[in-house]
Image: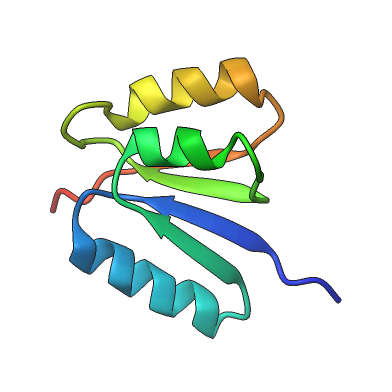
Length: 85
């Protein structure tokens, strides 16, 4: 059985680390990215099963990234996260 592929984009390295550990621990394949532009570059060659994105990031925020992804990959599920407590 193929493992699900999850991409995580967050400018906070500690959030990326925690999510990567949790997702791989759950048996998923996880790749992390520091910025929305890094994800868009990667999407030119590969596509994950789902993408998790922080909403607040410098440069391209999560909503701007969502808009770009939905134009290029309308069937890709995207989950927008907010790390605020």
